[in-house]
Length: 114
Length: 116
Image (cartoon, rainbow over all chains, first blue to last red; front, side, top):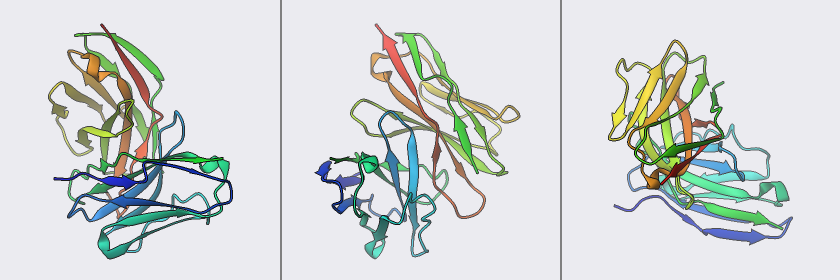
């Protein structure tokens, strides 16, 4: 079956513009995650959706970041008024929510803010 | 709060040799899971192996094994018979199993280079 897909694969934007990043999880996966990976760093958790529960937004770095998940499937991560420090690879992952909770990652969106 | 420490920024190993990548963790959770992921230069994160804190036996998946020492809070990855295709960044990660949180906490990674 299809894995996690993300679009666009690359995005270059000017400082101050808004961007939207899209994630299509594996069909049937109830859990969806967004992470950020800055150059040469590990992954930093941003937000987590599980079924119809309220999302865990504890990792969002500022109120310029928001995400939604429509119909329990596709998710969009929005960054408003982008800053240069937002430049990173944004990775989406999904999980069945069943032990051992392994997460399957998409290819990521490389965001460059100029 | 959870923390993962990977103290080896880079490692080299000769092809066909075994290599151990270190990972230590810190958590106040009684129940947790430990993962290793591989990230080749292409960027995708590939799940390798999982160990539950309640598992008494070390996890194995083909050439990968996880040397879990709970008292030392370590979860080292052992790759046997290294191959050139094993050259990649390797991340240790942890997930809490108590409560509802399920996000992964990652270490900073170890860049493994397999030499021919």
